[in-house]
Each structure stands twice: as C-alpha cells, then as structure tokens.
Image (cartoon, rainbow, N blue to C red; front, side, top):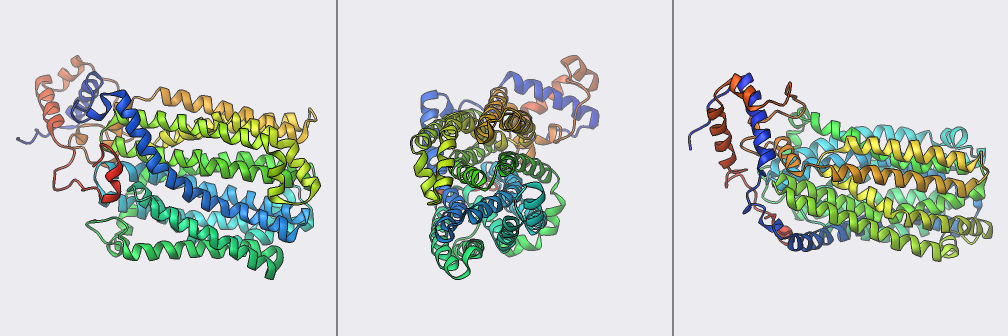
Length: 562
C-alpha cells in the first residue's frame, strides 16, 4: 500500500473533520474486531468473569493496605485504652488520609495512560508512564510530609482538639512520615503489575505485610505505648516495598520489554519531558481524590467540636466505612479503570461499555450488603475498636445511620465505579467537578447545617453526608450515560500514539475552528483524495505485528485482549 500524500495544515484540519464525520457514521471497529460484543449476553458474561478475575485480587490488596490503618486504631483502643489516645489516632489517620489520597488520586493517571498503552500493545510506553508517575508522586510526597509535620497545629486550630490530644496527633503523624515514600513507590509498582493483569503478587505481598503490621503493632505498642502504632505502620510499609523489590528481582516489571529498568532510569529525564498530558490528568485526579477524602474528613472536624467521645465514635465509623469502600467498590473502580482503559486502547469500545456497566452494578450491589450488615451489628462495630462504653454507645447511635449511608451507598458504589470508568477514559476533570458539586456543595454544607443550626449533632453530619453522596452518584451516572464510546476509543488512539491514522486527527488539546461539512472540505482540497486517504488510514493495522506486544501468561484469562 502506498503512503498517503503529505497534507498541509488546512488539508490536515479538513481531513480531521472528515474522519470525525466518517467515524460518527461507521464504527471504528469492524464486526470481526469487536466480535465478542455482537452478543450482549456473551459480552456481559465475559466482562463479569474478567472484572471478577481482575478486581478480587485488587480487593485483597486494598483490604490489606487499608486494614493497616484500622489496625492502628484497634490496637490503640485495646492496648492503650484511653479515649484521648483513640481520638488522637482517629484524627491522625484523618490527616494522613487527606494527604495520602491526593497522591492516590494522582496515580489514577497511570491507570489511564498505562492501561491504554498496554491495551494497544505498547510496553515501552507503560514503562515511560510508570517512570513519569514515580517522579511526580515523589515530588508530591513533599507536600504530604509537610502536612504530616504540621499535624499538631492542624489538630489544635483547625480540628478544635485539646492541647494534649493535639500533641499526640502531632507525634502520631510525624512517626508516619518515614513510611510515605516507600508506600508511594509500592503503590506505583503494584499498579504497573495490575495493569498487566499480574494481580496476584501485589495481593500476596500486601497480605503478608498486613500480618506483619498486626504483630509489629502488638510488639511496638507494648514497648513504646501510643507511639508504637505509627512506628509499626511505617516499618510495615518499608517491608512491603522490600518484598515488592524482592519479587521484581526474580520477575521483570514488564516481561519481554525492550528496555530494562536500568535503561528506563537513564531515560527518566527524556521521559519527564513528555509529562504534559500525564501531569494534567494526575493533578485533576489528585484534586478529585483529595477533595473526596477531605470532604468526608471535614465531618471529623465538625465532630471534634462535639467532644472526644463523639469524634472517637465518628472516626471509628469513618474508618470502617472507608475500609469497606476503598477495599471493595473502589477496588472494583480501579479494576474498571484499568479494564476500560485497556479496551479503549485496544480499540474495543463496545466491550469497554459493557465492562463499565458491569462494574457499576457490582459496586452498588456490594455496598447495599455492607450497609445492611453495619446497621444490624451496630454495637459489634463499637466493640471492634474499644471497650469504652461511652464510645461504644456513641458508635451504636450513628451506626444505623452509617448503615443507611452504606445502603444509600448503592449510590456511593455507583459513584465510585462510575468515576473509575470515567478515569479509565481520562475524564478526571469531570469527576473532579462532580466531587466539588456533590460532596462539598451538597454534602458538607448540609452536614454543617443539620449538625449545628438544627441541633441534630452527630446524626446530622451523617444525613448530610448521605445527601452529598447521592448527588455525586447522580452526576457521575449521567456523565457515564452520555459517553460516546467510539469517540473515546479514537481519543485513546491519539493519546497513546499507536493508531496509524492518528496523525490525521487533531492532537489532544488541538481544536478545529468548527465542525467542517463536506462543502468546507472541498474548499481545502479534493474531497475524493481525502476520502481515499481516510480509507487507507482505516485499513492500516493499529500496530505492525513486530510492534504488537504478546501478552504474558497471566493475561490469558482476559477475553478478547491477547
């Protein structure tokens, strides 16, 4: 096939518009390319199996990692036993969560760019985006560490804690600092493995670390009292990184890659130069997750104004809900983000659609079950954290509301998994806007008004939180229903640079002056010539057979990918 003719800027713009019109009339994929989606029942069953295969180990990974936070509070509640220490641990974990989840949100850019590159068979780009993610997140560590270092004045002046409790919060957060960089590196490495479908090693490593953390907490608290809990957690996070590195010394990070890790390290400066699109997605993701987590934790600041018993109860319930959400629906959301991005990168928009909707249904269903269990076992939740009867009674008084929160978290499951699917296609900005509108403008404002002016106190905080989650779920769902999946597949091709015809489309961020009609195309050149060029581009393979990566064995369970 002869090479298409070289076009000037005007012709390129006209061709881009024509290709866009042609793609709107005919799907980017042929029936053979997207054959697995011709039968909706078959596609549904395939994606259910694939998402289960991908999300269950990710659930185990996140359950173990988030469980380390609850381990702190449980051990302090029983081995230290004072209300002040339990409140300090709760507030300290709140401050850590606000700082940490901004980093987690930024890492969502790797879900987008990495999964789309992997789906297109571009292993070198997966390494590149992993390297860019590593540099960016380590830079963000400076902000997180600064926030933890100033935890005492934050607790004293912003969270209205007593001087004694604030001092304990400051010590708690400072002792968490050594674990932040190792935890960051571990998350990046685990994400890169998960994108490739190698989900078992991160789960096993995190599970072993969780058990190590329990033992370390027991020993360190016996030796160092309250300070032993954060010390144990930091030490456990270092161990988790060492276990991950030990695994990677035996198994390459990206099998059969053209570049070794040492070569990737030397290429870091050149990789960093192409950071533009990644950094934009990362910053939007950081704000999204930071504001979402911060929104829930602002209610802890409100609860702190009600006294130590209320803040201890509120922080305990928030921890349980956080563990339930981030370990299960959020894990499904991460799996959906990876799977949707991978299918869009592989130019399979129909399967991407099915995968997104299956994930949303699964996330919502799980949260209904979780909320029902919490409402029925209100006192058991309190006894999990402490033997203090006042705190247990306070937890029991709000646990049914928290159960309603979780049951309404069919909406939280929906909004979380919708957000995951949207992140998979690079729509972090929209998710950020919906978080601000739903969690903050509706949830935080109504929580404050119901808790204080109306006198509902702790119960009012939870009613307001429920309203915010429902609003966010509705916004995310409406956006997902509006998605043009074939258009998103084209954007993925442009973003990853793996589609042969991508040079005929406008680059990301480049806007055509208007949507050109056929008449406008004729003004810029021969419409017949442009149609011939478009036809030639459509006939080109996504990648030459020599460039297309052969998926490793762990990916064999993924239908229609290899």
